[in-house]
Length: 301
Picture 1: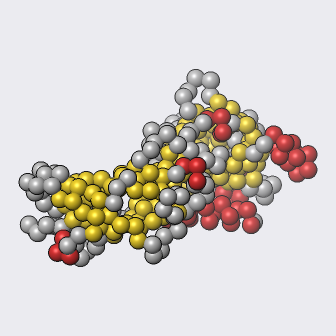
Picture 2: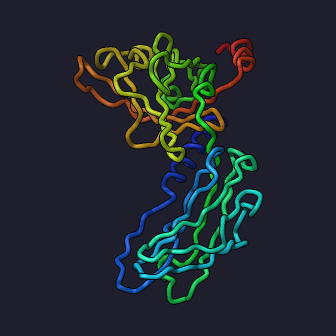
Picture 3: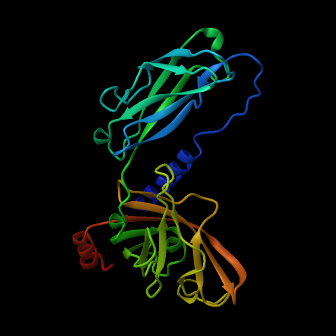
């Protein structure tokens, strides 16, 4: 039970992270205000990308350059300047005819751990009349280490912890040893052998376009099990189908070789919907062959 509570906590943290930034809509007058575009935001630190940008915006366009100071605020920081990050410059200039400029920041990839939650605060140095009361002149930047995607980190043996199994398994076990392999023809896709039940394979596809959106997708129409193995009776055509839930994000972690996927389990009869079983949280964490052998030998997985 401690393990499943651990993974439930991970899910809650992930949802909180995804919902941490809320948009606020403000109607501007003709007054001139200058501010950071976001009061708090998470930025990717990537191995082969030297700089990321923190935007500064103005409510008006001027026909001359405007330069402002940028200072690092020590209070509340747990990221260390020149160890975890550094600014390219301590000034930022909004060019004539424009209403935006960027503070360029270098994140030290090798000095960050995948589990770090490090952030720093910046402040614009400018006249008080340029500060919009609703936004202020500060921003907090959170550093997120984004490792290069390697599908091989998601192949081999993994431990599956499933809330579906927790609720419906007749053995009472909510964990399962699963073997995964690279799909022979589909890019960035793995095959999960005997995922929830013996004899039923499913596929998972990794979205790699945006390091801040490392989503994993299970396409609809895949059969995860027969109905009898879990329900004891048939409600439809004896197929429990699975796809990623549209209500929750499913995320993989390339730095840690694990993922969590929210699945919608449902039943059909000859292509016609019968009903949704529910939405279930699942965690997959890849392990070594030695650990897999130990689990087979000592725990019968």
